[in-house]
Length: 238
Ligand code: UDP
Image 1 (cartoon, helix red, strand yellow):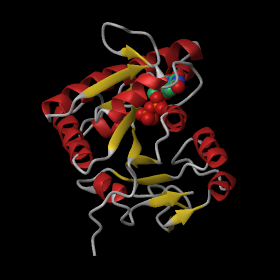
Image 2 (image 1 turned 135 degrees about the vertical axis):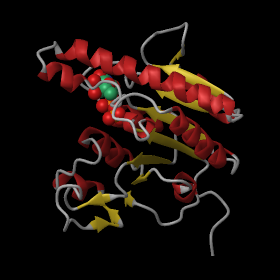
Image 3 (image 1 turned 90 degrees about the horizontal axis):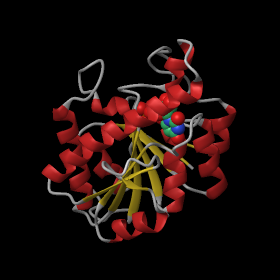
């Protein structure tokens, strides 16, 4: 029987920048932001408190800039600003879908987003607002996976839902290795030992040290809701 009660009362949803691409190679597809907003709204309708950490890879990644000769910290600041652009787009779509939102940026950019204040974020979650975290941790050399793990712990989310391109954790990259096998569940330590790349190792070790489970799954219609309802989907890292 399909469960109807959510398995978690507060979640942190990690969306990569790529999840905003739709069929595009670069930037933001606005039909996709609308789709995401409706998926989030559906989960909120179950009474779940939703925080979102959004990436920036659809616009810019610091590593690309540094490979091209840029100073890594400057390039990462560009990546951080890319996440804020995505945050503005998602916030707009969420509000059009009827959600009340709180956009908290780790870089001060006050005309656009509020500065991140942990207690404010928690209070907004308690009020039923979708809390959007952007600008990662505000510091270079990190990723939004790690920032998502930290924010999830800070606001005491019960789980991280990492919606991505692949439908779980595989023994190897399934795009490159067709014989790769999918894990239903995997322990944090095993994930780290295998050097799996689907989620940043710093994020995974932070979750391991603090006992915060992660569910990694593909971002298709109804999948976020399934994960929230505790239905088997993707891979559970625990
Ligand atoms: N970034 C950073 N510090 C952070 C989070 C992100 O410097 O705490 C920068 C980094 O350049 C990264 C970019 O922001 O490449 C976009 O984030 P990420 O690559 O995690 O986005 P995603 O892969 O989720 O789209």
